[in-house]
Image (tube, rainbow, N blue to C red; front, side, top):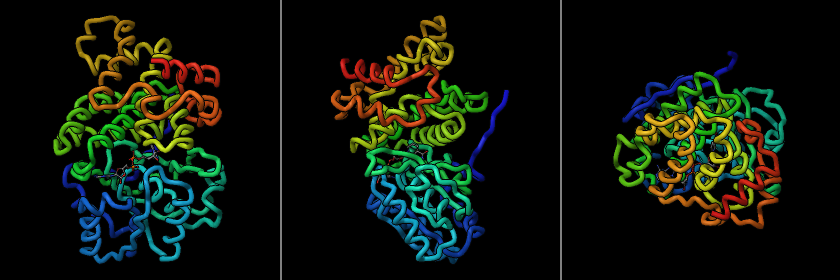
Length: 382
Ligand code: NAD
């Protein structure tokens, strides 16, 4: 048994944990760069909560609130420019995965001179950046616990990561109350992204006993929380389960990799403007059906979480139900199971397959262009 485990330096989790920001933040410096989105975080009052806390401990704050969903590498470049111009000490990402990814890359490349796009194409980060503090406001990407930033290269029409272990957050504050204002459709998309991370990492060829344990707990939490958070956004227990699932999803994806769903989703995300979680949702059960014969024991465990009566059945029988049980959950939260219903069409299959990302190499069953094409064709004929 051999594995490495990379995790954030410190994680503070729980309802009202945002109140601990004041006691944790002063070690990072006197001038903060707050990265956030264009409106939701301001409207919900979350931004003023954070700004007030910084003021209380005498920290000056520079605000960058331009981040739009599914951000481009140019957006991240702009954030870094503003950071440098204002000579801040550290970066706080306050928002969903889009915001966290822009904040994370701005912090990591704060002291480098090259263009962001060069690092996205593999240039090494040689000069350490500044501390990155993650405060997620969606439960989905787990970006608070990963060391990559997913950014769209608009010229190549592809989503790719800037990645380096040093990009990991120094401090993560996960307060489930910050996700109460997330509307039902985004709760569904982000929640399915989390479930995808947990299932793909669980069956990844790089999985290990620690990531396996985290995946099982995370899938349990999705089972307990996702439907409740979707039908009643104020259900704090459900939000708490999803915040935990999201964190665990990030930890496992950072350490075990993902699979064909995310390999394809990265390509689709560059071609279509569709929320990342929705893309993952419409692909998940199709990729599971493709993988089932090589990961029966693990799929049986997943199926038994969603339907405990399958404990009475053989692993083979339980495993065969895993994808259908995921489809049932998708239906409960209004996510279609056919890519066409999300606006992804047959004509683009060759381009999608050609742009697949490196995540696919962790898929438990070899998925080359031919197999990926077949998965997409089958998915579009249901
Ligand atoms: P998002 O960050 O794009 O947010 C979706 C929408 O929700 C936005 O309009 C945002 O303003 C709104 N929102 C956020 N918090 C809210 C709140 N508390 N109340 C009301 N509205 C709120 O969505 P996401 O799914 O969190 O992030 C998606 C991005 O993350 C994609 O670009 C995806 O590729 C990337 N991603 C990154 C990683 C990683 O490890 N770095 C992993 C998976 C996905």
